[in-house]
Image (cartoon, rainbow, N blue to C red; front, side, top):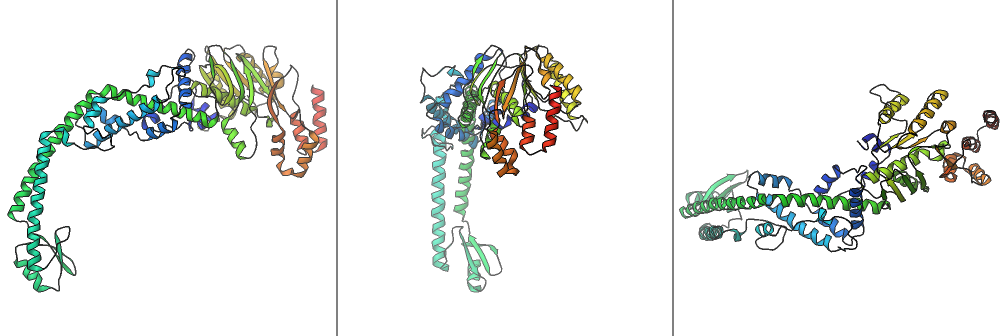
Length: 543
């Protein structure tokens, strides 16, 4: 598995995935099975990224979104037709609507075709016009989002429906004659239900009605009797003929639906192609929408085992900081196979940098634009992150135990180009043991094809000429007097103020250069001066 659910969670990559919102049921299904690209599939990934670029620049983006939102699920109906079932009228309507939306989508997509811009196999997302099936489901050629068994399907159907209409007229005429007689004899008007309501107090009228031949007792309530129109022999005959015509009409409609279902079955392959293609278009359009919203860029995909990020952003952190009125510092980092160690104070953003690298690479392998100004990278066989919080309550493992258990599986991978991100390995263990384990793993990973980044407080664990050592710039360039003045004014906001002045960019450091930001932060935050001086004395003796 290239990227596990735990890694997706730890990188906050689900935040990005949630921003990919297809509009049709087909796009939603495609997203659930979204492809991940592995080494050797660089050309396929480039094709995907070119599709995203095509839709990102497309002038009919909003129109396509609207069209996709009108697609309904017809896959089950198509499968039923293939198995020989007779489709219902509503199912035929949905298939007709599907074809109408397909035609609209074809027109919208093709409206911005430019041979100079198409850098991918357009055939993969080319929808098929289904003219014959469309004619069959829309014989009147009105292209309306409605469907019924049209008269145009059958002369027999026309004849049956004409006879039904004639019988209805005869029925109406017969009832009007009876109503006229009721009006003359009782001075009563029937309602739309062919009923009349008589007060129980009108006993003479009730007696007269019940002795007559035009009305039948229907029901009663506390105050009234209700009478309905009594059917004559002629009405019974008309109703009998009408029911006969209705039965014949139903049979004819079923025959027509059966024929239409066979046509749908005969178009199965083309319908399935269009369903798949609508899903592809929808997903790529959703990817392009996410790229637009996050101001992400098209990466440069290479076969070399390299990873170069210019001004990378961890999107969830960036949003959080903006909501707080703070600014996110994009990070630039160049990595190659082996181990890179990052040191710096706890407030220096090392963990966010680690997650940013993972998030950028996760976006790449998922075929997305990436949240950075530029990315040049090779694909990864796997992406792994350990942030020291994989504690397993169920198995009774401590944080360190769970961390090692997870890391062990990654270290067992003998081949392949992975991305391994480890935050403060063994940070909560005995310092001597933690240092030994960290140094050993740094050296072990440095011999692998994977690109590994480890953040650590064990500065000497990164010793070695071929290990890249980076340090968070931290408070090295600040105006300390200005910072102290701000802290005096707002002592309760010390962390926020220091974070504002913190330089999160990375710089390359020499072998024995050790960051001193922890002591400076403690001093700025007002820790007792005698403690600070004692700590400095201890450091000077150990250096």
